[in-house]
Length: 258
Length: 71
Ligand SMILES: C[S@@+](CC[C@H](N)C(=O)[O-])C[C@H]1O[C@@H](n2cnc3c(N)ncnc32)[C@H](O)[C@@H]1O
Image 1 (cartoon, chains in turn orange, cyan):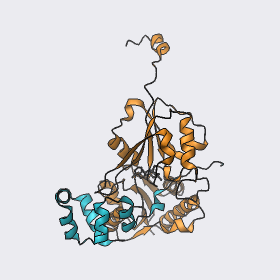
Image 2 (cartoon, chains in turn brown, purple):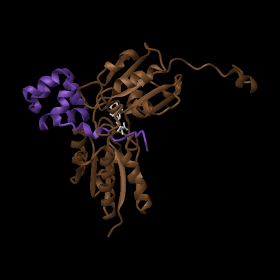
Image 3 (cartoon, protein in one colour):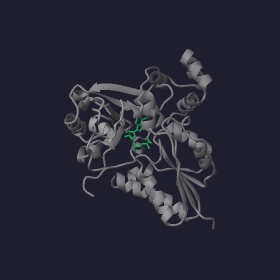
Image 4 (cartoon, protein in one colour):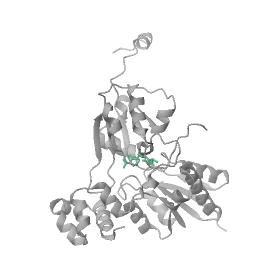
């Protein structure tokens, strides 16, 4: 029996344009391809590259909650590797960004002695920098899962940009919803108001996933955020309030010249 | 899932000449792909949710990470 191996690739956000050459080669040469791809255009393309594409969509019905679903994905991937197959798993965007199952599958496969690699790809954040014209070099950048931002005491640096992912399930602690918790957006607004002024402009962002529809770039005052519609693909961008003050004490100590 | 719409949008995503033709005359491109009237309306209105539902977008698969409060 040949030794199984695992490669996890991403389609990018707008497929097939974003998909990398190496991802294409891995999809083509694998015995089985497990796809977690919401966008039918990407799926259509992937099915042209390999005739044995299995959608992971059924696991969302089978799982008790989302975590259960992700664990089932890991099991499905690992079982195929253990059978000696060359396995490719595909996630949309970058397969290592907000993809629990991908990291876990790679870790387990390696622990069991299989060759396993996760390849980089274009993420929603990459699209955001392009579409919003933001260079993370100008103020720095911090990013969190939206519910983690709510429920944990991260120290947020308001002199730096803030990106919040998974607005579409913000505040859901049941891990069963595919929409924000009933008061999810209100909690988000409330928490952000402890850090930023009410008139601070934030952007609800959705990168283009269809060729005829431009990205959604909706700027709203923070005080209106809770009333703003979000989808499962919405990301929030919160700009820095200002540039931070200069560390004069440090500069003087090291005789740094302006 | 709408086959014609999937074909047209897939090709538009890949083919710059087709994109230019679509910009000039979207109706002619929709004729070429045999897009049916109800779908044309969604395309004309740039109705994102409507088009995605015609294509059969599975929104559940868009969420792949999670945060637990108590570990
Ligand atoms: C589970 S994560 C998957 C991210 C994906 N692996 C990536 O690299 O972009 C889902 C989150 O990604 C972001 N996202 C996905 N698609 C997006 C899009 N078209 N525009 C903006 N953000 C998007 C949203 O924050 C969404 O809640």
